[in-house]
View 1 (cartoon, one colour):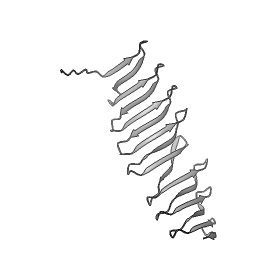
View 2 (tube, one colour):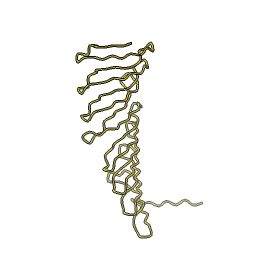
View 3 (spheres, helix red, strand yellow):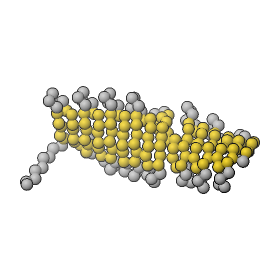
View 4 (tube, helix red, strand yellow):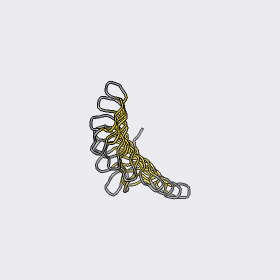
Length: 186
């Protein structure tokens, strides 16, 4: 069978009305893309590569707002993100460049703030944040693997701890502003 090659800078597939429904081409920086368009001409899904080697898939609603993305950055990080009806990212899940899992579910000043990540010692934690963006509750595992719930004041200072000690015994402890224990139960 004889092979044929068709070359062009851009391909468009049109529907019966002549409206573009599929576009394959190169962006201004010569990066390839593949776009699916709705009957109204809005891009509803786009897959593309960036000049730095990143790859991504964006899915938009009928108003042209991106509502979901899947991406792999050139630094090795991967993400899955979901946007609201205004196109603002409201939840993001992924792997950081060093392969630690991350999850974010807060937008502050237009930026997504991570609320789940691996702590410095490598144990998973989940944080709950107030309207000011301060972490107020942190649930996670201590370095030896024991479960711990930490309660923080409006300044982000530790004021209470509930958990299991390394020997498996339960404990509750409250601290004053100087981080001195005021009440402990074991």
